[in-house]
Length: 436
Image (cartoon, helix red, strand yellow):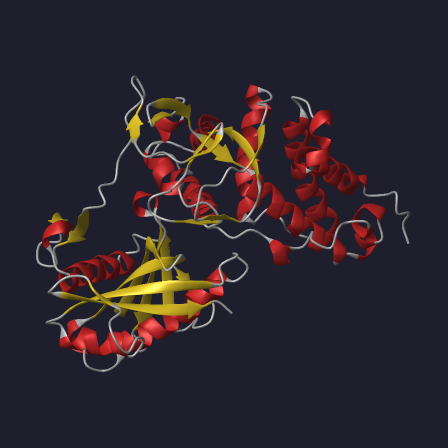
């Protein structure tokens, strides 16, 4: 057996991680602390692969931090900002620390990676390198919600993006804490599974919480629609008004009152004014948009964790609000969505987080119980996804047009009577979901 003092790269990695993250080590950190950690992470990835055939480089957390490390390698050290998380009322956050760098730095890290791997279209490596870039960006999207927004506004975000929040200018920030925390737990578990590393004192002495069981999920915060924070270099800010700062580079904006949808006859994208549509029309428009985007692979979806063969899920955050859209897949074709349900975060109900429910079934499949099926299975998936988030119960709000007898029948399978009447034309049902 080799001496336990071998493989000191593991000692260096965990020492630099402790120095970077542990609150007790704040006074010991300097301008090189972050760069030292990133370099040690890079070395650890190489050594684990070469010496033990152990791969950590395929994890999205590693890829995100590698982008930053490679950028730092060329431009010099960038000091991180260390803050405790400030949370507002009715906000749940999975961790209590920030590890911030300017969003500009992360944007430049991504831009540098893309520029270094981009070839002219006539070059023989063009397709291969483009596929590589797309694959890496897709991987990052598995742990960071805003990859597409970043890519769409890469030049703007690379030019010190500043927003005016409640009249005060704030530079946007990028929080690395989750990625540092998760990759450290991944490495800890990998080392415990390797005979030559698990006997090292640094691994033996690790706290039992250093394990992927406690890793932070992609969506690490839950809040109400009226208290959505903006991540800045000064931490979370909970603004009532958000404006583009004077002189700042213009960024693409999303208007939540308009739903882009593909006209099935012309194939063109049209704008529909959501404020003039009833609930049935809204649900159908959303369903057709989701179905078309899935069929044409315009969105990245994941298989359900419980109902892997029949449910897919797409998560996004329009206007900063969490939305989970589930699709029920046609068993025969495995390519088409025949019913869907979307859970969109809305105002709290009875002091608990609440999600507005919108469901729809393809016209030719209606009357066969698919709406009920997709809702039941999606609730299973939602409960699974919310495990270990701190949420014990949530409400689902089902708004049904009085004239829509089929949808009312579905709603009554989950809540016997409407709790309140939103208007003369709409019934509102509330369903309490207990997280296992």
